[in-house]
Image (tube, rainbow, N blue to C red):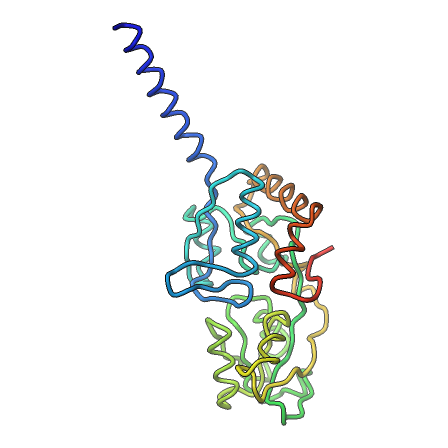
Amino acid sequence: MKNMLRSLLVGALLGSLTGQVVAADQIVFGIALEPYPPFSMKSGNGDWSGFEPELIEALCERMQAQCPLKEVAWDGLIPALQSNQIDAILNSLSITEERQKVIDFSEPYYQTPAMWVADRSRELLTTPEGLEGKLIGVQGSTSNATFAKTYYGKTSTLRYYSTQDDMIADLQSGRIDVMLADALTVEPILKSAAGAGLADKGLAPSDPLFGSGIGVAMRKGESALQQRINTALASLKTDGTYDRIRSRYFSIDISAH
């Protein structure tokens, strides 16, 4: 009887410790409530898909970690990270000097230029002088918004949007004159019925405000998690997993070299 009790106690203790290990090896990833096709898309039953949810799944499988997704409004992602509501953000967050003052990043996992888009019939010079007096649409809390505010904010009116879909709807209805958005998300739309009447009006020039690519964000000082994510990302790229995921959504190489 004593041996049996001892075995039960040991088993209970091991089970408790095992539970602690699993809990300690959970990394909660924040994902914006607002879908961002083809990077993130949400089905009617609440499941997430797209390039970034797939990449999170592969990344966490490589790290042997449990990685639930927590939905947060886009402009609340960094505050949620800083307040320990989430542990990481893999959601098209540009690595910029301003953000690096308050959070840390992994190595970049993709990069994309910014594209000006307007009605196909409009001739626009997309310099600050050329867009003087125009209504410019940008998605709020993005590097595109920072760029537009810095160079166009004094001579043009900026309108900020929570989702790209809302911004496109306003562009098509004439409520804004032009929009600035990530080329990778806009190009497929311009080729579809949803983008009828719109056209590429050129890429924004390279600028430090756009950052050095898109990275996984984490709280300041979490070097162990940063190294773990960097190692897993490198592994996904080396064995071709990253390219297999990427090719399902993009025909061009978007990886940051």
